Image (cartoon, rainbow, N blue to C red; front, side):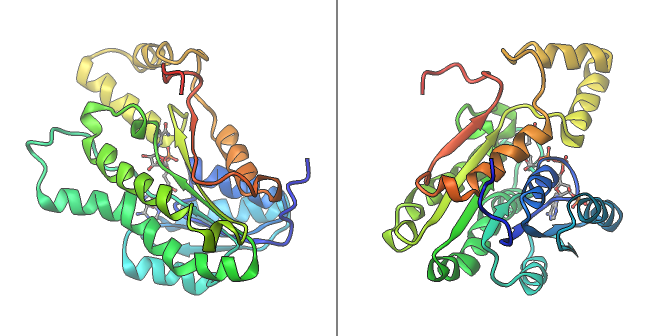
Length: 261
Ligand SMILES: NC(=O)c1ccc[n+]([C@@H]2O[C@H](COP(=O)([O-])OP(=O)(O)OC[C@H]3O[C@@H](n4cnc5c(N)ncnc54)[C@H](OP(=O)(O)O)[C@@H]3O)[C@@H](O)[C@H]2O)c1
C-alpha cells in the first residue's frame, strides 16, 4: 500500500539504533526525507549511510542529546518544519523509588515527557497551517501495565500520555489534519533488551539463553517483537490514510497485556 507521504519530511529522534532507527527506515522507504539524531556519532552516521543507500532519500544526521535544549535546537535547525515528528529517547534506569532523588525524576521527565512536548510545541502549529502533520511518540507498554521497577518510566511516560490525550483533541490541530498518537512497545529485540537480559543473567547466575526464554514465555506470541514490525506501524500512523486516527495509544506487545481494552 502506498502510504501517500512521498516527499514529506520527518524528524525521528533517538534513531541510530533500535525502534527509532526502524521508524526512520520505514518512513524513508515511503520516500520521506528524514532527519535523525543520537548522541553517539559512529552508529548515527552508519545508520544515515545505510538509509540513504537503501532508499535514496535525503538523510540528515544530527549528533545531539535530544533531552537537552541545545540538542533539540540543533535538531530543529536541521529540520525546522517537519511534516512528521517521531519522539523517542532512551528509557530511564530501573530502581526503587526510595532511592530516587529529585534530580533522577527531573532527568526522567526531561527525557521521556518534556522533550517530546518541547518538540511538539516547536512544530505542530506550522503543521496545522500546512494542513498535514503526524506526531508519533514512542512510549512503553508500561504506561498501560506499569512495571514496578520502572517507576521513573511509568510516571514520566504517563505524564506525556495525559498531555497528548488533551492536545490531540484540540480542534485547531485535529481539524487541520494533524494527528498525535503514542506507540507502546512491549518486548522488542533491540540493544536495550539485550543489555537488560545480560544484566538479569549476571544477577541471577542463569544463562542469557535461560533468561531470554523465560522472558519470551511471558509473551503469548512466543517471541520478541522485531524493530521492523514497530517501524511499519509507525509509518502507517504517519500515512495519509491514518488522518482520522488521533489521540490513541497503540500497544504492540504480541498479546502480553491481558485486558480486553
Ligand atoms: N525495546 C523494548 O523492548 C522497549 C520496551 C518498552 C519501551 N522501550 C522504550 O523505547 C525507547 C527506544 O528503545 P530501544 O529498544 O530502541 O533502545 P536502543 O536499542 O537502546 O536504542 C536507543 C536509541 O536512542 C538513542 N538515544 C538514547 N538516548 C538519547 C538521547 N538522549 N538523545 C538522542 N538519542 C538518544 C541511542 O543512541 P545514543 O545512545 O548514541 O544516543 C539509540 O540510537 C526507549 O525509551 C525504551 O525505554 C523499549
